[in-house]
Image (cartoon, rainbow, N blue to C red):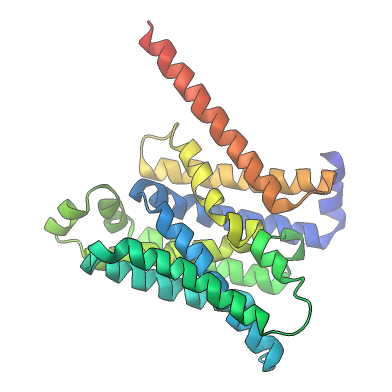
Length: 284
């Protein structure tokens, strides 16, 4: 660990990686709490994989047509937000078609991404960053983008906390109380989409859903209120990301996969501990 701390002091890219991981962890813990409570993990997974289409399109435009300012993450943001709006509208107006639309967006997004990448000449080694994550490649411009996304996510949650809380627990009751369920649902899915984009650098498209849900589920064992779960989940996510970076640096392992395995280990440990505690209390 001391070797990693010294490396962070000596190397700017590791400091960038740590900051990016913490920024992503904060958004993940806050919005992931809504995702787990609302039980929309499948929707979050669909959004995570749909962004591949936008990333492939952006990469194709940048490489083939010389749109040099366009980054794959820009395409991911646009695609994720559009997909979030589509799912929200279907969820609130045509619920019987929800599963079909979610599955279709998942498959079409990935298929479009593959086609765009197939049409882009050259070796695409850097795209592995977006599929499996690589915090070591984060630069200052990426940090700015992550910071902006974090501000948008946290600002949206602070401004609309009570409507979001209402639809998480009882959508019909929220509608009767005058909550605009369509707006709240759309906002929640858009915040989820932005959070997924922040996590792409940390664990990549393939494993992003695990970091949205596992720390939150572990934090839920100790929290009694939603805001408590958010704080605990954000803190735990940050610890996991930093630990994953430290372990991967020392052992020369992929950051994303290491972080997810650590998150899974914490989740399993917490659940087993909670089950043993409940059994012991029941036996008294």
